[in-house]
Image (cartoon, helix red, strand yellow):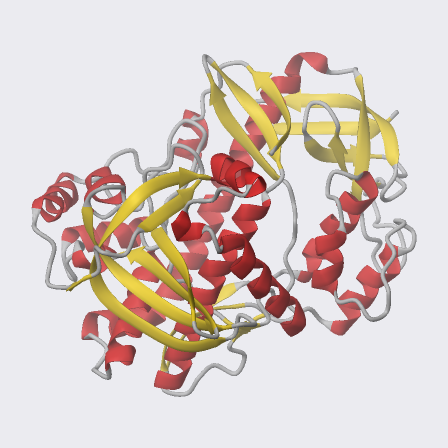
Length: 476
């Protein structure tokens, strides 16, 4: 649901695009190759168009990577998860493949995204749009009654989505008990998978999403908490990513999404912060379970969640060919995990998926996919930084424009974080401060002063500069 929204005037994001070096168009040869691939008939694949799949995405999405169908089976459940088969459209060694390597992933900006693939593919022939036959990689994952995986099949297939669903309506349907048949079991299966994750030690941060959305001639600065159906949907993606990782580890080749597990001393620091923030943390409750119980709309809970984000650092892509990596797991998932479910938006997924198809079929991994694996971690790290900078820069710019004419005003805010001292002492030359979240407008920014963590305060706006995309406050 939307927690808060504020209208901002017309904003030009062009300078941010130029600063980050984001491409404006596709090279002519790459666009032509994409258009030719889009016009071609689907390649050979098993016909699975009888499965009534549906997609579930944010409203207005056109780059539809996944479609699902959930059903009961004796002793458990069957998850069918169709993923857009991008490799069926992008020729290895072609100019289109070269251009996707330059981009790495889709970068989302309020005035339009910078897509990984030309729209004729990413929002057209490769997208799992409803009521048309599409090439897909279909994962069929059987679960037992507790959500444990008992069998995995992955195959190239021809599929047909029956409907394009959006989260707000899906959540409303779930609340009313009228979910459509293909996803009627999603709350039940999602809850089972979440519970299994918590038992493994998985950590999910319920941080509200801050975004900039178009609103007529202006923009809305939006702070939105994820609805439960989004988390259930994410669990299906995590399930598939773990199945992919298991395939690759068993086969001795692949590309994992890795992250160190939270260090015990970091968990202890977080536990020490719980008391002052009024968060009750029983000794027998894990971090992930505790976070699910908190309400991020409450200032002290929001401050605790912000502190918990420090546990989730150093995510990376790790390739291997032969010996598995020393640390193959993802600390947030608490299991080995791979990105394979968003190939329209992430370059790495295309190659990891091809590895899984080959390993499942007992054949050699194609040379073009094997050769790509060691190069992908650096490319994805660089494009991750660009995508993060674009997202943060757009929000910073909207905040500065929104507040430019309100310098000197005071606002209610919650203290989310305070500057950590160095060796127990104040940092030389740096005044005390931290991060605050305003109630209205929904702005998060730096604030100077002796800030009591997790409390509510009054802050004064001292600077708001659209040219530098910066906003600053001081304790009032």
